[in-house]
Image 1 (cartoon, helix red, strand yellow):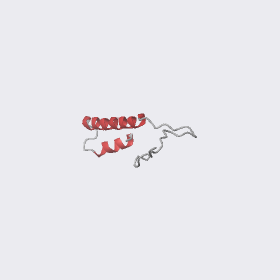
Image 2 (tube, helix red, strand yellow):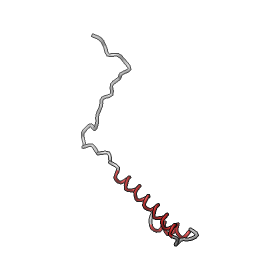
Image 3 (spheres, one colour):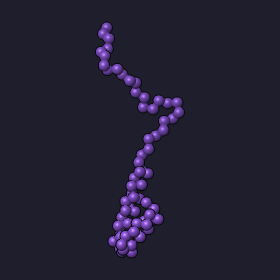
Image 4 (cartoon, one colour):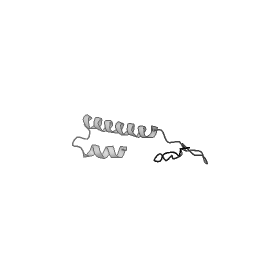
Length: 69
């Protein structure tokens, strides 16, 4: 949401200059801003160094029993 979109919404209301409309739009603006901040602050998955096996775990076949003896 940007300032142009807020102005569009405000002009579409019956009373664009009313305090309640302005407060509602401010509330929506702040909620959008907080959501963007949360997305930005999410930890990003680190990129492994080139030529390494990142979190390598061998695949073990557990469907068969190991040979005896």
